[in-house]
Image 1 (tube, rainbow, N blue to C red):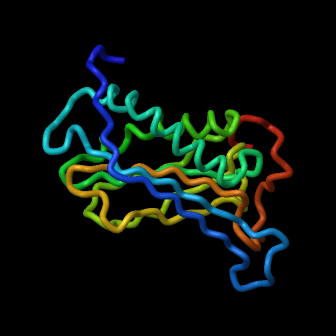
Image 2 (cartoon, rainbow, N blue to C red; image 1 turned 60 degrees about the vertical axis):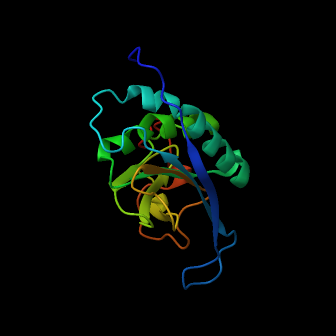
Length: 197
């Protein structure tokens, strides 16, 4: 990492949203699936200018990532989490790369909070106006090819991000899609341990 001083993270607000899914038109599931999204809105220290070195920002965001990940793990129960994903919405005075700092700060935080699952954390990011909603991709925490857990969750906050802000989000789920029935690798068939199969 660069010797640049870490920027101060100025947090404006956080949100926690929990969705409980009982069915998708078929019979109620034996166990509902819960999807939780934790969001944080912070000032973008580089809004309105080009900053060639972003690693200091990524480093400074790690405690925030850890806090959001721990909140989600506690909400759903660490041992019950089966799927995850992450996202960033950058206000219009920033750039896409400002959201990319969340790959490590948010992704590694979730893996640590859950006991280092093997699968890479899927992600999405956008530069957008205030109130923008984003669909976050989810997949199984131990094997990305588990088809029943290919899903998504909507995140967003009505008054964020403002032009000089970034909304960072982490999402976890305690199950796959309700009534999943299109074949593919099943969770109980995970055996390779490579984060894919």
